[in-house]
Length: 185
Image 1 (cartoon, rainbow, N blue to C red):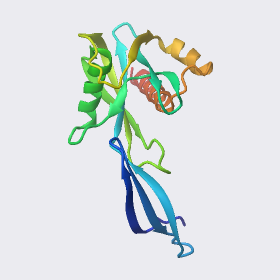
Image 2 (tube, rainbow, N blue to C red; image 1 turned 120 degrees about the vertical axis):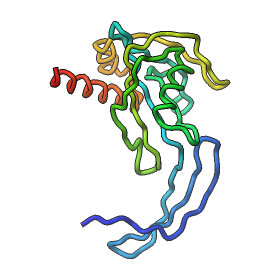
Image 3 (tube, rainbow, N blue to C red; image 1 turned 180 degrees about the vertical axis):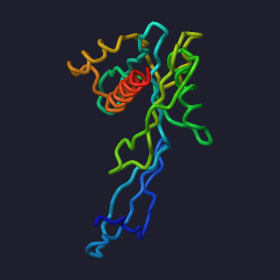
Image 4 (cartoon, rainbow, N blue to C red; image 1 turned 45 degrees about the horizontal axis):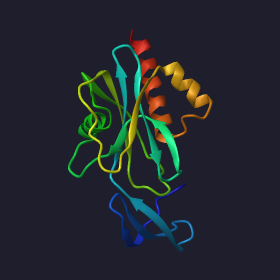
């Protein structure tokens, strides 16, 4: 039976504003041998799927430094210290798009990459969103706002125009939410 590996030692290797890198020495419960692993400790993240009254999904396009590409994704960001994920979702929606919603509901959470990351990504659905102002970008954001129907999004996924894993996950949770609503109706 698989068992947790006890932590023997933890060493902080560096603090990089949005994450901290640690080296963990864990002991295999099967062999008793110690092994070193690298862990990225970061705040929880949120994604929000903003849906307008006419069923369009508000998305953002921005340059991502990791893959050096412009990506199409749902709004999202980090949960600030002391902030609840729901409050972060409402804040990020407003900051990145200028939109607000009548209702925001939690539709799922995942561990983005449990091999390396300690955090969770919480996905929210914003219902009846409408633009109430202008986006409030920080100094590192350059964002274009776009509106798409779910069939358009499915087509862009099929053509690999949407490849951001957490956005694909958010679309999955949204479709699952819609299926559950159909069952209830």
